[in-house]
Amino acid sequence: MESTKQAIFKCGEENYGLDIMSIISIEKTISIKKVANSPKNMKGIMDLRGDKIPVYSLRSKFGLEEKEEDPDTRLMITSSNGTPIALEVDKMEGIAEFEAEQILEVPPLVRSKNTSYMKAVTKNKDRLVILMDPEGILSEEEQNNIKEIIKKAKAKGE
Image 1 (cartoon, rainbow, N blue to C red):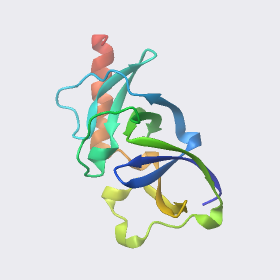
Image 2: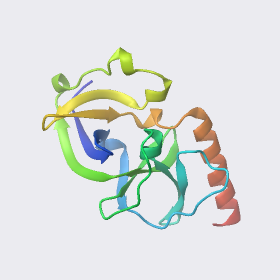
Image 3: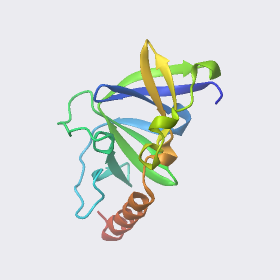
């Protein structure tokens, strides 16, 4: 992996990074409309400047207990396999640049279909940071469900 600039954020006690080139914007939380029969990790849909964007809970994805939104909660707007998505995170920590030699492969012990979002690991300020691959966040089933939900929301004009 080559050098990279990452947006560092927290979910629970863990630090994660997402390449800044894959982030469309970072938003404070806005009104989220719940959707019936949505995937487990999906909180609902938000209207962002006229676009219907699914809001996805990384806390739920990582098996953490949901928490109330607070002033630090942010939505990172990105795309996963062509689907626009807002990833809800606990707190943004800032931007960090990592050189290629600082970036390590994900240990084989933790690699599985449930951890396909893990691209690499590194350290930032003596803390482990999991660098995420946005293409691995949504399962194929979640992608299909979310695309269908967005299509229905657009058809209803919601």
